Length: 103
Image 1 (cartoon, rainbow, N blue to C red):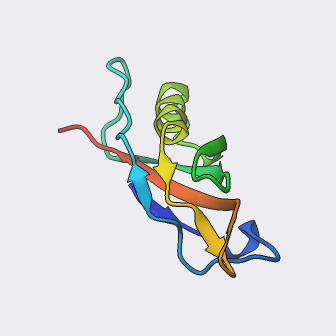
Image 2: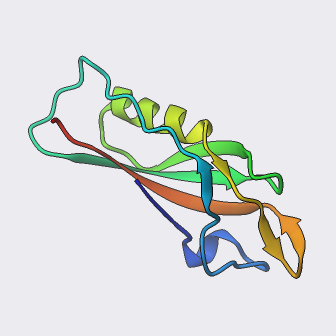
């Protein structure tokens, strides 16, 4: 999984680096999902000033509902270091690229 910040996601207090993850459980691959090559979902996560994920949404879908839900559920559980701007903790929006591949 790859966390990054898109330039347009944080107008006004644009941090250059995404906050560090403190707790980032991987997604569970749905047992009934079917694909022949790795798939990817990009999720936007609104991170509160406390570092907790307040909301998540799919930006780029895998086109498989179960895979998208697994990505959302995983990122919803994440915890980040609070983002600080001028010493004050602020909310931030990050994007998470979640990849699924058969082992």
